[in-house]
Image 1 (cartoon, helix red, strand yellow):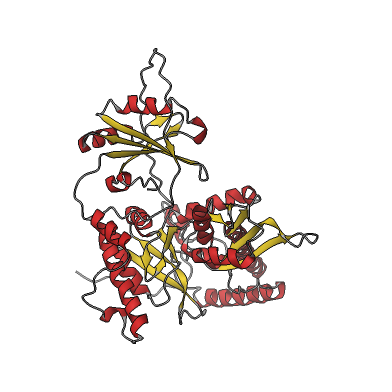
Image 2 (cartoon, rainbow, N blue to C red):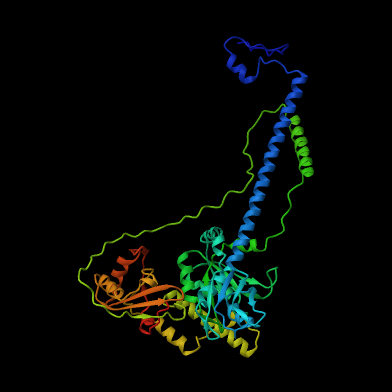
Length: 506
């Protein structure tokens, strides 16, 4: 065989019959563009590039504007959420007394009391603003109805709060993505590691951060901070177990967080770069066009490749997944006989106390007792030893702590069931106790029914004592999440020792 010689091409290549499809793909057989057409093509490319850059600039301006609007909305909502209205103030109470009573819940930003120039007294109300919204919520829940100067304070939200309710709900919805608690009235000698060691008994602590005096994050803390858990159950147990707990001689205030972690940046926004001016935009467009044209000239003979375009914006945050559980509505039997009138037993709710009725709370109380004794010993001895060097410390304190710890060591199961969100205060009448007893008798022998009505907080709790703990479990399984008078009932097992001591604050 003789090899085919390789001949040098001379002249143009013509497409033969049957090769039209391949010719179109290769671009063969097309007429050559004149110099004028080439100039028109370059102008069209430049015009397309100008439009593309303008669209990018418009999207950036829109994103910047939306970010500014969000910051303004967040700042307005957080400022309103951090305010409380204090009414029914006695004329003997001064501004310093109010500050001292409310500063345990968080740092106070300002207080405004209206004064009457004719009498020289205040008008009986004040507006107080905290640095953080969680402090306002804790103060509202704890100080409403408290006695000061011979009168019961009325603490609530300002009247202009409903106007910003949609924004506030958006902030609170963002906060539900995180399992965080707010802690205030922290002893100055306690560090973040000390606080973390106490709260680790309830679950894994993702982050524990105390607010510092300086902006650099160094120096002593300001007495409040945030603790984040990895699940909601640990968060709820920490709030119930450590609120009003004596740690180092100071009562901790622990409450739920109603703002996301980045919310404080909206209260004090960082300096932002201004949008580029028209001249700067034009210069940037010229530089982009020059670089683009240079790249096109350099790669004119290379084949075209397609790659992934870089995203202009960061991906959105994952949406919150809300799991809602509904209960089945069970139809009750109507009794045709007229019930006998009986005087209801209604007691007033007591002061909120920490609910240390779980193993996690017991471990936290033991650790907190060690830290408290270490702080007290350090103050008395004036030594520079750290809390970590204190070993073999026993829990010491008043008689209430010993009674509390003895109560926690009990292993007997409770026979008391508490029903929440079953009725409203206006629904309480002389027949309610008989109706509750009749309904709960389906699940066991009911020994006693107690109705606790907190008029200040408008919360009604119904306590049902059975003869056997198994009957409590059966009643809880049947009544929890049921609907009663349009409300979803919450049924939980109540601590036996607290009920025996007539403590219905749980």
